[in-house]
Length: 479
Image (cartoon, rainbow, N blue to C red; front, top):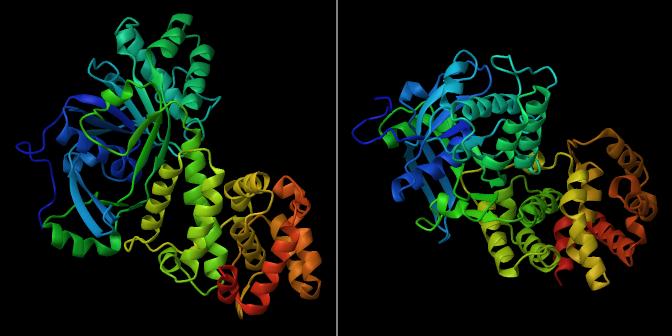
């Protein structure tokens, strides 16, 4: 079968306007895919040079001329199951930081360069006190960026119009601000001059971002079937879900820079990214955390099974619509639309997401993802939210470690697991056990048993789950 390669007659090499630190699956199915759409449907006309920031041995994208297939699969806006392969041509070439570092720095000398994209993992935007200006290359990503910017600053004599726009996609809070702060730290420690530091701050734009798309990577188990359907071999094919969202905290002019007036992509340029993070954590991540103990104790193993279940889905929908969404400070219609998109994502027939894989560290996840909404609802309404309290009761029962005769493989910090061993050994003390669970102030940040009516509500739900079974307890809740 013929290998997919760049055909110059149909796959243009575009001007090098983007340098991308990171060659992994996520960026190729997220940013590179979006830029490819912009190239085709607008006058964006941007080519990407990928920099591999670590010393890894897998083949370069250049072996296929930078082109590859992004296979986008899931539920579309009409509720239809779709699979859309797209040959991505936005990547021009790949350069290695280790072995080709001078070539990396030469990219900084290109006057057409405008964008810097990165995804160097959560540990990528960190300071390394061993990095020096003379390192070739330095270890840390921010140190490489500092050298890169200094090369550009010197080459263009500090021209203000030669600054770059940074879109870091690492999964840390305020990723743009964090990168800028460390770059400035290196610039000062390496004594690169006050004028250079001023240029970093005034000529360059460091945006913080929120990225959202499930990228499952290379579909190894389906390759033979896929290549037969596609009609070619592709060593870099990457699969991802249909949904995507790119939120950029930055100046308004980025909208026109990204040609969003010409193409309606799910890219949002906002002044404050915080509400979008709260929305994602509360609705998407919160739905996962609320669903896991309830669905698993119903005998369900995957997210798609749970969302298609006649008891679990109505429970989850009410929890999100009646309790989580009213506790978030955003437009209600926008929140409901996001909730609907989350439900469609959970139904994705191409992703088999096991509940137990989501269950990792569920105690902490409940605290960060759902407890803020539980507390806000209780304060606003004067009474605890029943579905969130039921989910908390289900979490307690889940951590007791049994699904019928089957042991649940719990995975969490040992100090959080230890109390459940004692509570499981004394089921006759259930009421006091639940009170102790709610009173874990060091974990929850407060004594939940002191909230009005919450202890009685959770204790009653635990009793129903233990005596009636999870499914019957859910059905009673909805009456």
